[in-house]
Length: 148
Image 1 (cartoon, rainbow, N blue to C red):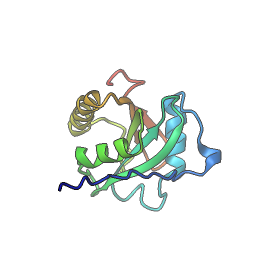
Image 2 (image 1 turned 60 degrees about the vertical axis):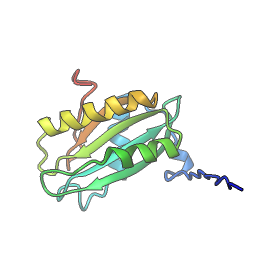
Image 3 (image 1 turned 180 degrees about the vertical axis):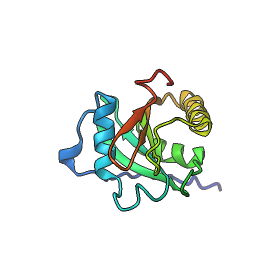
Image 4 (image 1 turned 30 degrees about the horizontal axis):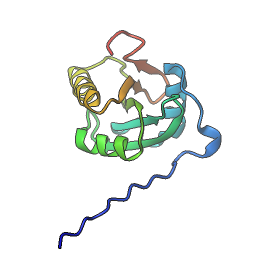
C-alpha cells in the first residue's frame, strides 16, 4: 500500500504588523530595506535580500538570500524561489548593497536580475524592482532607471 506524504507549508511574518505597509515607490522600498539592513555590516560586505510582497504590494517580509565578500555575493535562484513560493508572495523587490557606495550597476547585477525575471515569469511572480543600497542610505532603482 502506498503512503502519500503531505507537505506542510508554514509562514510567519518577520516584520512587525505596524510595518506591513504598501510599497508604492522605489523610495518606499529603499527606506524599508535600509531600516532593516544591519548598519554595522552594510559597508563591509555585499548581501542580497528579497522584499516579499502580496498582491496589493503590502510587505510580507524581508529575507536575506546570501552574504558575500566586499565586491560581490552569489544568488542561488533556487533558494530565492523556495522562499518566494513558500511565502505565497505574488511580487518581489530584489535588493543588494554596494559597500563602496558606488551606485554604478555592474554586468553581474544586470545578469542576475534578468535570470530572476525569467524564472519569475514561470511562477507568475512579478519582479517590481531591484534596489541597490549604499551605506549612507542612498539607493539606485533599476525600475526608475529603465533597466527593469
